[in-house]
Image 1 (tube, rainbow, N blue to C red):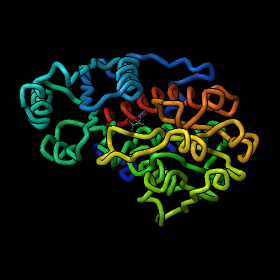
Image 2 (cartoon, rainbow, N blue to C red):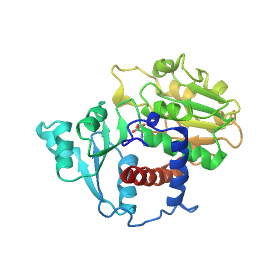
Image 3 (cartoon, helix red, strand yellow):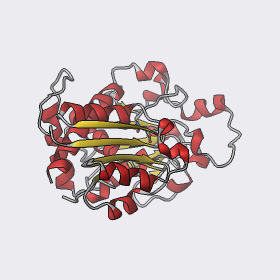
Image 4 (cartoon, rainbow, N blue to C red):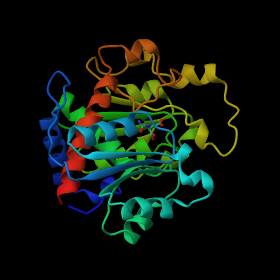
Length: 301
Ligand code: NCD
């Protein structure tokens, strides 16, 4: 296994499956987490230079459940506000004895940091619009929990795909498996990177895309990443791309509905979020189990 988790491409299919299997040891069927003092001598720093609720808290909880000390770095009261670069900030943590740095940053800085600080382990918790490997692992775990395998599934991803690091890492992760079909759907101006994808195909008609789907991953519009205003009429957008109970009728009856959060109820209705098909709340719990597995493996290697 590589020293750092910078991209899901750093993992082989066997390593992905091993991490998922290992994560099952950390969560029971009721969603309770195993807590054990496995790494009392290790210090994990949670360095988030972009907003986060789920990812940041789940890394902190995962590290705590494993007995690590956690340094919760808050960019708003840090020296970054005094003009310090991320390189000096992380080097300072390194000199203080931090063993592992969980990093979310709007720019692609993680590779250079990992090269310049070889003693520290780096886990990518979100790299601009580029990648989000632990989200892909928890998404794949959630699908396997419900469908046993990814092989033979019809998977639909809908929403603002161009700005979605969740989509890019998920696509890289599932390229290891024999999914039956992968369909990208959404407003053409939010799916320009997916018009002629390397794997899968783009279907602008969301109801057509949904036909016989086993898995539907919905994504919010990431306004904070838009370079120019889209001049979007939200009601028209919802008519076409919001996953509603009636659109869900096009998918298989046992289709699972996913969303990485935060949910805006533009991309999905509250009724679908609360429906029996929704596994969105399980994704949140699986996030802790996956991060416990990732931290354990990368702290031990
Ligand atoms: C995603 C992210 O930050 O990329 N959220 C998450 O990690 N749970 C998706 C998003 O912000 O829409």
